Length: 283
Ligand SMILES: Nc1ncnc2c1ncn2[C@@H]1O[C@H](COP(=O)(O)OP(=O)(O)OP(=O)(O)O)[C@@H](O)[C@H]1O
Ligand SMILES: [Mg+2]
Image (cartoon, rainbow, N blue to C red; front, top):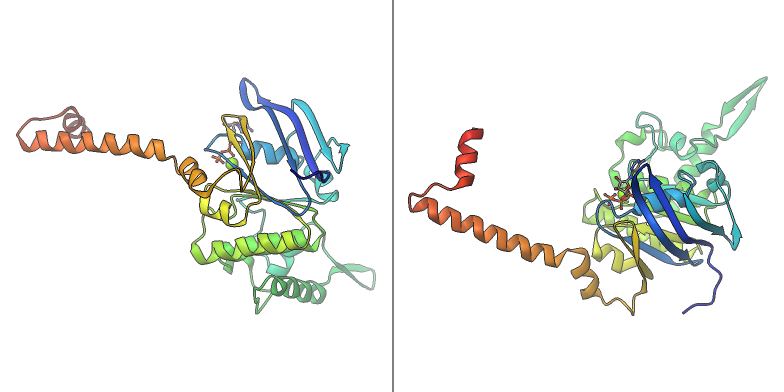
């Protein structure tokens, strides 16, 4: 195991929403320059955990340390100022605004003209184009609306923006979920590029192949609890695929479908089944 100091660490944190226990006794650390995948089923607590990191939520109990120091964030702005950038799946972008405007959303470059402070289009366009091209995306016209970009390209704008504004930690909540193979590849490539710049990445995904391709360590959540953190050596690919694809659930489903087929056979023999009756009632 590494003896490097984690850039970010939580110890035994709990988060409750009323009577819902979203996180129970969760500990996790993030090392500089690693890609740390956060895995688990729907409702496991992944988004709640990263929202605690990014200052959206405050833990109900437990410790949160950034670069070894205890921190308490009042808002996502505090986390951002310390270099923790989060790209949410439902991106905070304005579709009708230009790529360059979206790139600088919240930190607009200004140009003084007489008594006025105007948005510096020239600087914004040039920088947005340069930063995107560093990530391998060629934007012909940074003044075109961001809504004209594909999902993958939009994710790339969000990631490029975080890197440009000096993120030390990049948190990506299911950035590849809605993407095709090629676009997902683009995002995965950026993750690796960010890592090579020394940025620590937390990557949430439901895709075991994406996780295994870029991940160094894996933390698995299940119903608000952590099952532990594993290195690649400790978690062979087949094991992860089996775990994440819900192999056991798939086998159970196969059985269930077999029974359906069987009931179809009964129907063929002229026997009505309960399902048929329900369907008949519904139609
Ligand atoms: N703001 C909230 N208010 C009440 N309950 C919440 C809130 N946010 C999350 N929860 C609950 O906390 C639990 C964990 O939710 P969370 O969104 O963290 O899961 P997740 O692992 O990100 O799931 P998914 O893979 O579906 O995105 C769920 O039971 C959810 O209903
Ligand atoms: Mg989520």
